Image (cartoon, rainbow, N blue to C red):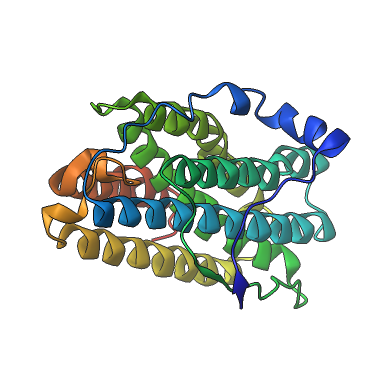
Length: 258
């Protein structure tokens, strides 16, 4: 375990990286009004730092999945389409980290840097399991949540701008998993379907449990400065449950993966 932080080296590396999000430096990072309870502010900083760490972990997972796709002989256009996902996730990590910084600084969190390894002989099946879990389930659900966050009423527009920028990429991420499955289900043996169903069911169940856990929290946990606080407890629960049914279970049923 190590302390989590997001850093930049600068120079040409930063200039090239900025092509993925040229508007990063133009967002109004100093516009937040931070009057309020310091405890609530610390909670918001922690939420945004946790979000940055989750996005960083998603970048590692996407990179490992891409490696499996390439090694499994997936068509290069699908691989190329997927290749932008790790970079997008790193941009999202920076956006969330900067939100924490704008709120007064990142929270001190420990980071599990256990590497994501490429193992096994059924690389295409393993890659498909990851795509189903991470893209078809998680990213499709996240896309719906982000859409709701980007249009919610709020006193401070910086959050809306951050969510809108992440939403641009989530539209791509939410679609690529289903696109991949259109190809993969014609290539994989029938024996792979139970593994894909299990991957989808496990991830969807975890999301459902998290939705209900958060929905049971007292309303005071939903600070307007927090990651999802602008929706409020009831709003988050409604959006989360509907997204799981419409964006995840419905297309999975169409593909007979649930």
